[in-house]
Image (cartoon, rainbow, N blue to C red; front, side, top):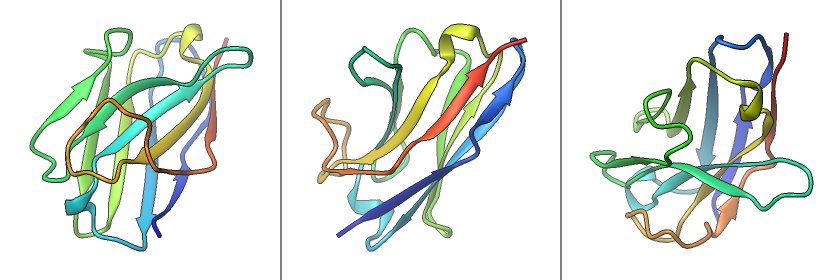
Length: 122
């Protein structure tokens, strides 16, 4: 049973940067694709980034492409989301999720963290 714990959220001004972390325990990253999702009240959870079990392939959704970067550290069992040039519309609760497959399938993850709040405001 995988356990995921997000950290690194907070309040940042427009144009600023944050790095979110997802600590994974109970399994080895090699066997799981890790996703970042975000959700605002009243809307569905939105998938924004994914990295494969190998870490070789990453995928970013159009709203964050060129601004967000997903990466992983196998030695620490950590996955990161580097967020630059943040905009007010990036305000959401951010979740990391692990699929039961080593590739980004597009299906909802099997395992989820508890989420971390990101607020972009001046």
